[in-house]
Each structure stands twice: as structure tokens, then as C-alpha cells.
Image 1 (cartoon, rainbow, N blue to C red):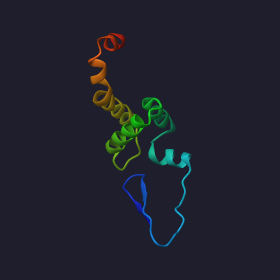
Image 2 (cartoon, rainbow, N blue to C red; image 1 turned 135 degrees about the vertical axis):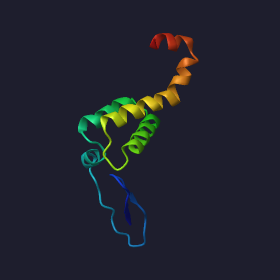
Image 3 (cartoon, rainbow, N blue to C red; image 1 turned 180 degrees about the vertical axis):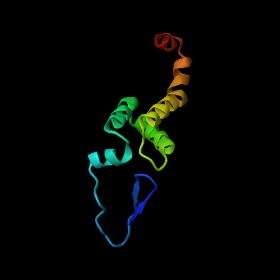
Length: 102
């Protein structure tokens, strides 16, 4: 069974019908989830190849976007919030790292 969630997300739930789930290409996902291709590219840069960062930034950006596609502002605000929550405390507690970033 497929359940539509407001916005772009569809949730697949197993049922007894054994119906194949509809597929979506990566390009279709990007077109549905983000307002523009360059917003997706900004999201990829912001996550820096770190899966945990990618998941958290996407989650924060999607919450801000609501039922709309994720915008550039959503990605940038989410990336900043994630940095402040996860990275900044470690940097602030390390004088050498803090000096490097100032």
C-alpha cells in the first residue's frame, strides 16, 4: 500500500497483495523534493559526504519546507542549524580548531 504524505513524500507499507511498489528515478525525486536542481546541489555540498549530516540537514530542511519543495533558504538554514547543534560545540572546545576557523 502507498500512502501520500503532504508534500513530496510517499510512504510504502507492505500489504498482502504483493503489488510491486511504483518506482521513482533519482531525477524525479530531486524534481519533486527540491524547488530547483541547484538547491539539491547545495544540499549535497552542505552535507559534505557525511551520511549522518545529510540525513539531519534533509530532515530539518523538509520540516521548514512543509508541503512545498525544499528551497535554497531551507537548505542553508538547515545546514547552519545542524552545524550549530552538532559541530560548533566541538570546534569551540578546541582552541586550535577555533583559531583556524576565525
